[in-house]
Length: 246
Image 1 (cartoon, one colour):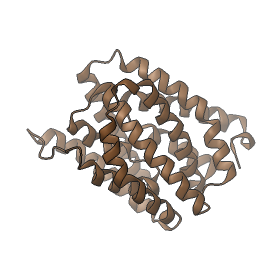
Image 2 (image 1 turned 60 degrees about the vertical axis):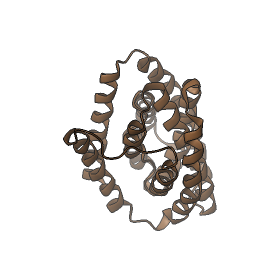
Image 3 (image 1 turned 120 degrees about the horizontal axis):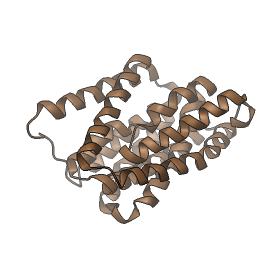
């Protein structure tokens, strides 16, 4: 089943949700998957939902890279990719056998703990270096291949490195593009990416692009303090959603 064979009501809900998800991600750098994935699962089932989400997110993230291209930290992307590519391939191949419910709830707990940790510590105990993003890319790309997206978990690492606003949005988005392209190759090799899932993900592309453009316009007018608070709110909502629903 693809996007053109579902009913009118599910189609309208899916379009509105995809636009809202991409707009939120355009402002915070993440959170779009937590908004869009439940609707995709309800309409298409979990095994098709994650490949569809990967295609749609690839388009959404690529558009955020373009809108923030002048601020992307390209050397950081290089170190991230060294670890991301091999582990995303491995995770994609293991996707069809993974205990997704337990893994997703673990991710939800981790997100909530990250918010608590940011407020309990007077000074961060971890300041990632550029080279350390090789290991960050490896771990989170593997996890992303299993649960669809790890944007909320990646966010604190990019923020701890010192990126904000356009530099954060563009650099995080390009790192995610690397993950998603690699995952799609792995899903295709494991027969998890069907033609219907590919068509559906591509059909959502223009909607994701429009949401990214809207998010960029909002970001340009957003004070730095409000930006950080908004990120933490999305972390809490994403964490609770993943923990409760799995």
